Image 1 (tube, rainbow, N blue to C red):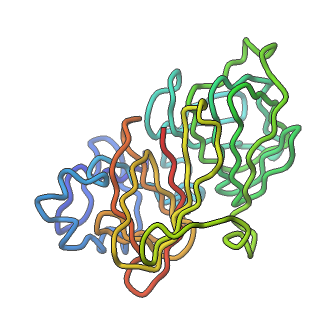
Image 2 (cartoon, rainbow, N blue to C red):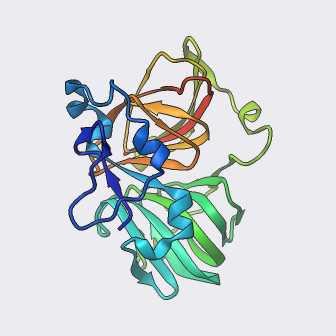
Length: 271
């Protein structure tokens, strides 16, 4: 598995878990700052997180411990377990990958890392983020590529009779004017956030964090994905397409800011 777990941060970089390979950009490992290796780093969110380079994952999926979830569909659990709430990567290995009809009792989140996912509600290209609310259900077809998935409750293939009418929350982060389309609100000097309107009963919340400041913004959640620029997370710099995800479904506290000389846009998700 190509994880980097920052259980122990040292001046040499991030120490790999026993039995799993290190997959991280050398620049990211070299970027561990003095703040990140200070004694207090042991209680930072980053110290209880896994770091995944999504570019490496899509280029070298065989280096990761995917398992077969459905025919022609592989899955990589990042935190949690298959039969509980969890965060994972889906990989449709053929151009017309599919998943049969299933029900979601709690919110589902899908971010298209590379490729396209399709269901009856629409086509979700690379960079799309969508949320299916509790009570929803869908059949996935004509899908290929890699997707970052979060379940507040795993899919139920036996209770499709419970599916209700619904409208997904759909945001395309690849649109050139994406940030102008949504009402970001300044929460502190140089930091604005957009809280995605999700059903409060769905067991999940999510927000975009935009920063041009070196002053930290405190975020509590289960993952942070850098979408644009470079973000400093607990003193370590991460470039675009780097994912920091808590090793368990317990939320972690992260200090997020813009890396020196850069602006930062990140997606945060929390159970």
